[in-house]
Amino acid sequence: MGLKESLKTAIFPLYEELAKIEQKKSYTTFCVQWGEKYQPGGLLFVGRATYGWAVDDRDTERLFTDGCESQVFARPDQMKWVESYWEKSAFWRVIRNVTQGVIGPQPDWYEYVAWDNLYKLSPDGSNPSNALCRKQGNLCFEIFKQELTVLRPKVVILLAGKSWYYDFLCSVNNDTAPAVLGEKNWSRYKAVVYKIGDVVFIGTEHPQGKAKAEHAAALTELAKKYM
Image (cartoon, rainbow, N blue to C red):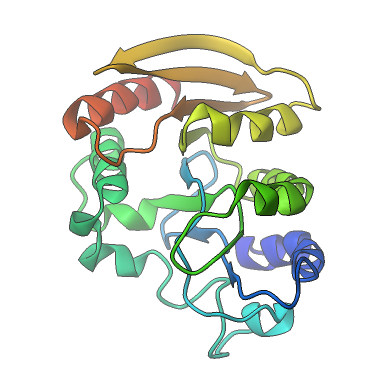
Protein backbone atom coordinates (compact mmCIF):
# COMPACT_ATOMS: atom_id res chain seq x y z
CA MET A 1 0.00 0.00 0.00
CA GLY A 2 1.40 3.39 -0.99
CA LEU A 3 1.71 6.48 1.18
CA LYS A 4 -1.52 8.00 -0.07
CA GLU A 5 -3.58 4.87 0.54
CA SER A 6 -1.96 4.19 3.93
CA LEU A 7 -2.57 7.73 5.12
CA LYS A 8 -6.18 7.76 3.96
CA THR A 9 -6.86 4.47 5.73
CA ALA A 10 -5.29 5.82 8.92
CA ILE A 11 -6.93 9.25 9.14
CA PHE A 12 -10.26 9.03 7.28
CA PRO A 13 -12.21 7.69 10.29
CA LEU A 14 -10.74 10.44 12.46
CA TYR A 15 -11.82 13.09 9.98
CA GLU A 16 -15.33 11.63 10.06
CA GLU A 17 -15.37 12.32 13.80
CA LEU A 18 -13.87 15.77 13.23
CA ALA A 19 -16.74 16.60 10.88
CA LYS A 20 -19.22 16.14 13.75
CA ILE A 21 -17.79 19.08 15.72
CA GLU A 22 -20.15 22.06 15.67
CA GLN A 23 -21.74 20.82 12.46
CA LYS A 24 -23.88 23.91 11.98
CA LYS A 25 -20.85 26.22 11.95
CA SER A 26 -18.79 27.00 8.87
CA TYR A 27 -15.20 25.75 9.22
CA THR A 28 -12.63 24.86 6.61
CA THR A 29 -10.81 21.53 6.85
CA PHE A 30 -7.08 21.02 6.32
CA CYS A 31 -5.21 17.83 5.36
CA VAL A 32 -1.46 17.23 5.42
CA GLN A 33 0.37 17.63 2.10
CA TRP A 34 3.56 16.05 0.78
CA GLY A 35 5.67 16.61 -2.33
CA GLU A 36 6.12 14.08 -5.13
CA LYS A 37 9.75 13.51 -4.08
CA TYR A 38 9.09 13.28 -0.36
CA GLN A 39 10.52 10.11 1.19
CA PRO A 40 10.37 8.64 4.71
CA GLY A 41 13.27 10.06 6.67
CA GLY A 42 12.60 13.52 5.26
CA LEU A 43 11.50 16.90 6.60
CA LEU A 44 8.02 17.70 7.85
CA PHE A 45 7.13 21.34 8.55
CA VAL A 46 4.17 22.07 10.81
CA GLY A 47 2.20 25.27 11.39
CA ARG A 48 -0.69 26.14 13.68
CA ALA A 49 -3.73 26.09 11.38
CA THR A 50 -4.71 27.66 8.08
CA TYR A 51 -6.70 30.83 7.67
CA GLY A 52 -9.22 28.93 5.65
CA TRP A 53 -8.16 26.18 3.28
CA ALA A 54 -9.39 25.37 -0.22
CA VAL A 55 -13.11 24.84 0.34
CA ASP A 56 -15.86 25.38 2.86
CA ASP A 57 -17.10 21.80 2.98
CA ARG A 58 -17.34 19.48 5.98
CA ASP A 59 -18.33 16.31 4.10
CA THR A 60 -15.51 13.83 4.70
CA GLU A 61 -16.31 11.64 1.71
CA ARG A 62 -16.07 14.59 -0.67
CA LEU A 63 -12.92 15.94 1.02
CA PHE A 64 -11.15 12.61 0.45
CA THR A 65 -12.44 11.77 -3.05
CA ASP A 66 -10.15 12.21 -6.07
CA GLY A 67 -11.54 14.62 -8.63
CA CYS A 68 -14.19 16.02 -6.32
CA GLU A 69 -14.50 19.80 -6.30
CA SER A 70 -14.16 19.73 -2.50
CA GLN A 71 -11.07 17.49 -2.41
CA VAL A 72 -8.46 18.53 0.17
CA PHE A 73 -6.70 15.20 0.73
CA ALA A 74 -3.94 14.39 -1.80
CA ARG A 75 -4.96 17.16 -4.19
CA PRO A 76 -3.32 16.97 -7.64
CA ASP A 77 -1.62 20.32 -7.00
CA GLN A 78 -0.52 19.59 -3.44
CA MET A 79 2.80 21.38 -2.79
CA LYS A 80 3.05 22.52 -6.43
CA TRP A 81 1.12 25.69 -5.59
CA VAL A 82 4.00 26.70 -3.29
CA GLU A 83 6.16 27.55 -6.32
CA SER A 84 4.13 30.70 -7.02
CA TYR A 85 3.28 31.50 -3.41
CA TRP A 86 6.33 31.15 -1.15
CA GLU A 87 7.65 34.70 -1.69
CA LYS A 88 4.40 36.15 -0.31
CA SER A 89 4.68 34.42 3.06
CA ALA A 90 7.24 34.68 5.87
CA PHE A 91 6.27 31.15 6.88
CA TRP A 92 7.09 29.74 3.45
CA ARG A 93 10.23 31.84 2.96
CA VAL A 94 11.70 30.26 6.08
CA ILE A 95 10.65 26.77 4.94
CA ARG A 96 12.27 27.36 1.55
CA ASN A 97 15.54 28.57 3.07
CA VAL A 98 15.73 25.69 5.52
CA THR A 99 14.86 23.07 2.89
CA GLN A 100 17.43 24.35 0.41
CA GLY A 101 19.98 24.61 3.21
CA VAL A 102 19.47 20.91 3.95
CA ILE A 103 19.00 19.34 0.48
CA GLY A 104 20.75 21.94 -1.68
CA PRO A 105 19.40 24.61 -4.07
CA GLN A 106 16.80 22.48 -5.82
CA PRO A 107 14.36 24.58 -7.90
CA ASP A 108 11.52 22.23 -6.93
CA TRP A 109 12.53 22.17 -3.24
CA TYR A 110 8.86 21.99 -2.15
CA GLU A 111 8.52 18.54 -3.73
CA TYR A 112 10.98 17.09 -1.18
CA VAL A 113 9.11 18.03 2.00
CA ALA A 114 5.78 17.56 3.72
CA TRP A 115 3.62 20.27 5.29
CA ASP A 116 1.11 19.95 8.08
CA ASN A 117 -0.88 21.99 10.59
CA LEU A 118 -1.59 21.06 14.19
CA TYR A 119 -5.29 21.94 14.09
CA LYS A 120 -7.37 20.81 11.15
CA LEU A 121 -10.54 22.90 11.57
CA SER A 122 -10.45 26.67 11.40
CA PRO A 123 -12.78 29.52 10.51
CA ASP A 124 -12.18 31.08 7.11
CA GLY A 125 -9.80 33.98 7.77
CA SER A 126 -8.53 33.21 11.28
CA ASN A 127 -6.92 30.64 13.52
CA PRO A 128 -9.25 28.45 15.62
CA SER A 129 -10.34 29.94 18.93
CA ASN A 130 -9.19 28.38 22.20
CA ALA A 131 -12.64 26.79 22.49
CA LEU A 132 -12.43 25.24 19.02
CA CYS A 133 -8.89 24.02 19.73
CA ARG A 134 -10.17 22.24 22.83
CA LYS A 135 -13.09 20.66 20.99
CA GLN A 136 -10.91 19.22 18.21
CA GLY A 137 -7.75 18.73 20.28
CA ASN A 138 -7.91 15.00 21.05
CA LEU A 139 -8.80 14.14 17.46
CA CYS A 140 -6.02 16.36 16.14
CA PHE A 141 -3.55 14.70 18.53
CA GLU A 142 -4.51 11.30 17.12
CA ILE A 143 -4.42 12.50 13.50
CA PHE A 144 -0.92 13.90 14.11
CA LYS A 145 0.25 10.55 15.51
CA GLN A 146 -1.11 8.72 12.47
CA GLU A 147 0.52 11.22 10.10
CA LEU A 148 3.87 10.67 11.80
CA THR A 149 3.48 6.90 11.62
CA VAL A 150 2.76 6.93 7.88
CA LEU A 151 5.02 9.79 6.74
CA ARG A 152 7.92 8.67 9.00
CA PRO A 153 9.82 11.96 8.94
CA LYS A 154 13.28 12.13 10.47
CA VAL A 155 12.98 15.78 11.50
CA VAL A 156 9.77 17.69 12.25
CA ILE A 157 10.04 21.48 12.44
CA LEU A 158 7.18 23.03 14.40
CA LEU A 159 6.81 26.67 13.31
CA ALA A 160 4.04 27.35 15.78
CA GLY A 161 5.25 28.54 19.19
CA LYS A 162 5.43 26.36 22.29
CA SER A 163 1.95 27.23 23.53
CA TRP A 164 0.59 25.67 20.32
CA TYR A 165 2.83 22.64 19.80
CA TYR A 166 3.82 21.38 23.25
CA ASP A 167 0.60 19.49 24.05
CA PHE A 168 0.97 17.67 20.72
CA LEU A 169 4.49 16.53 21.62
CA CYS A 170 3.35 15.31 25.02
CA SER A 171 0.53 13.38 23.34
CA VAL A 172 2.95 11.75 20.89
CA ASN A 173 5.16 10.88 23.88
CA ASN A 174 2.43 8.93 25.71
CA ASP A 175 1.20 11.99 27.60
CA THR A 176 4.57 12.72 29.17
CA ALA A 177 7.07 15.53 28.67
CA PRO A 178 9.47 14.78 25.77
CA ALA A 179 13.23 14.66 26.26
CA VAL A 180 15.07 17.86 25.34
CA LEU A 181 18.26 17.34 23.32
CA GLY A 182 19.32 20.97 23.15
CA GLU A 183 18.51 24.55 22.24
CA LYS A 184 19.65 27.09 19.66
CA ASN A 185 19.25 30.81 20.20
CA TRP A 186 18.31 33.03 17.28
CA SER A 187 17.46 36.73 17.44
CA ARG A 188 15.45 37.17 20.67
CA TYR A 189 14.09 33.61 20.49
CA LYS A 190 15.24 30.03 20.67
CA ALA A 191 14.57 26.74 18.94
CA VAL A 192 14.25 23.70 21.20
CA VAL A 193 15.16 20.18 20.06
CA TYR A 194 13.12 17.24 21.36
CA LYS A 195 13.50 13.49 20.72
CA ILE A 196 10.56 11.09 20.71
CA GLY A 197 11.38 7.59 19.50
CA ASP A 198 13.34 7.90 16.26
CA VAL A 199 11.96 11.35 15.42
CA VAL A 200 13.57 14.69 16.21
CA PHE A 201 11.21 17.62 16.75
CA ILE A 202 12.45 21.19 16.52
CA GLY A 203 10.06 23.58 18.21
CA THR A 204 10.29 27.23 17.27
CA GLU A 205 8.25 30.39 16.75
CA HIS A 206 5.94 31.26 13.89
CA PRO A 207 8.09 33.26 11.41
CA GLN A 208 5.71 36.19 10.94
CA GLY A 209 7.38 39.48 11.88
CA LYS A 210 10.66 37.91 12.98
CA ALA A 211 14.25 37.82 11.69
CA LYS A 212 13.95 35.47 8.72
CA ALA A 213 17.65 34.98 8.00
CA GLU A 214 18.61 34.23 11.60
CA HIS A 215 15.60 31.98 12.06
CA ALA A 216 16.27 29.96 8.92
CA ALA A 217 20.01 29.68 9.70
CA ALA A 218 19.34 28.29 13.18
CA LEU A 219 16.79 25.77 11.92
CA THR A 220 19.02 24.71 9.03
CA GLU A 221 21.92 24.07 11.40
CA LEU A 222 19.76 21.94 13.67
CA ALA A 223 18.03 20.05 10.87
CA LYS A 224 21.34 19.15 9.20
CA LYS A 225 22.70 17.95 12.53
CA TYR A 226 19.88 15.45 13.05
CA MET A 227 18.99 14.39 9.49
